[in-house]
Length: 145
Image 1: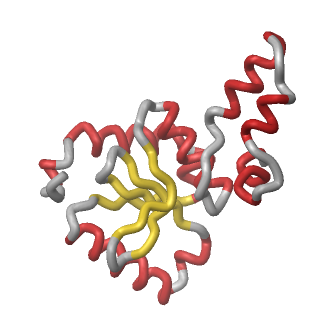
Image 2 (image 1 turned 60 degrees about the vertical axis):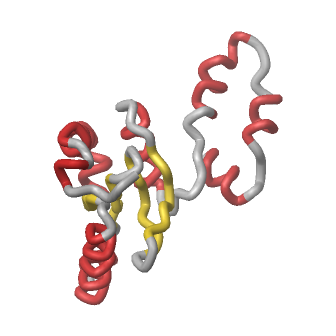
């Protein structure tokens, strides 16, 4: 909710921090460090938060040349898409596959997750991502840094 309000320009992190003075508000101020930008859905915000909590560097809405924006870029080379219901439509499936192929050709690795993965099995999702990251970019034939 806070991220949405900040993203829309209804308020700023500074505005919120000013209203949370003193020791009693320390936990609330800590939450503000998790507020980001660029997420297009609550599911993306949740996924990003789980990855950040696991110590993974995350960029939201990362642009790949000729493929467009991807929901998340992890550690500079692992693209993550959080796919909603509309991704089940055949035209969208074909578009997603083309985008993934273009990205892989450029040296990225692409993983796709769904609402159920993020909401009901975040531990499995994070474990899989950590497994891929542990293998390293060179294992996947990654692009030059």
